[in-house]
Amino acid sequence: MKMFKILVISLALCSMQNVAHADAINDAIKARISFYQVAKHYFVPLAAMAKGDIEYNAEQAKLNAKIIETLSQMNTDSMWPEKSSKTDRPGQTRALAKIWSEYDAALVKLKNWKDTSTVLAKTAGNGLDELRKGLSAVNKACTACHDTYRAEKF
Amino acid sequence: MQHDLSIVKKMENKKYIKKRVWDLPTRFFHWALAGTVFTGWYLGEYRDFSTIYLHFYFGYAAGLLIVLRVFCWVFAPANSGREELLPGFRKTIAYAKTIFNREPSGVVGHNPLGALSVLAMLLVILAQVITGLFSEDDTMFSRGPFSSWVDSTSVVTMTAFHYWISRILITVIGLHVLAVLFYRFWKHEDLIKPMITGVKFVKNQKH
Image (cartoon, rainbow over all chains, first blue to last red; front, side, top):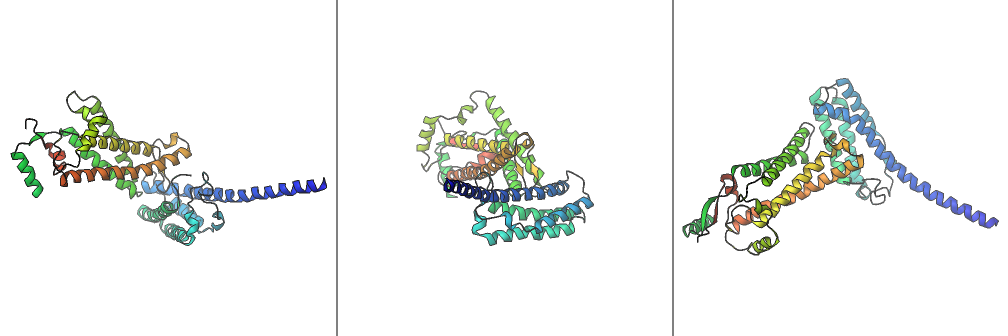
């Protein structure tokens, strides 16, 4: 009976470990989606200014660009564990398995975001034209990565 | 030039006669839609903050043009060629059998295969306009006017379709252009000029 209890408990522990392991990947996926959602939150007013939907405000532009730069510099490696692609987790993520098979090339695209964001943080407060130019560059970096490494659907 | 000569020779034989086949509204619709779709595609493919609103406007314009075209088609008077656009299976097969003949078809208006390609293009363009209304571009931070009516998963789906349909659209329009070139160089039949002037060489029924 004692042996049986040990067996049941260890089996339960094993399965829990599996669950915990699965959750770690799920959490990483959730974290990175949320991370980009936060970035989006600070992008939206800048884009609205660039498009002329709201009036240009140097202070807000500068502040948001600074936050975006800070976000872009964050180390997000742990949000991209192996086995967290759309192939592994269909329905949860749009990240293509290609990211991990050519991780260095993907990092170059990520670095473009960092670099263009640094420029944007410096220039966003210098008038609408500068904001537009800087934001366009960041936008191209975003699109380049999305086009290559993101599926159209979850 | 050789092609033109052969056309002239056929003219002399009176196998083909000049006839007005496209009325002004049809020609206007054709070129307006071609211009709108091309510009809309360009503004979407190479989108930028300063021009993205124009992509929306060209989408609305394309949708409006198609609605007008369908309206004109539904309320067209009899004998104005409105049956041409739904040629039916037997006519289409009969026409398809003659497609590789190295002579002008001399068809007045839409030939059966052309009619099907028109329908295909209009449907695909319409689908592109409708999915666009529900789409969101998360690098441009622009969203279609109806995207707030549906949940975010549907927006992603619609955006995906908006992208896939754009690829289909490029394919069907590419086929349309290839077909026009095929008529010009294989069948010695110019379809471009008639779409500008309205006048086309058609088969002489009395011949």
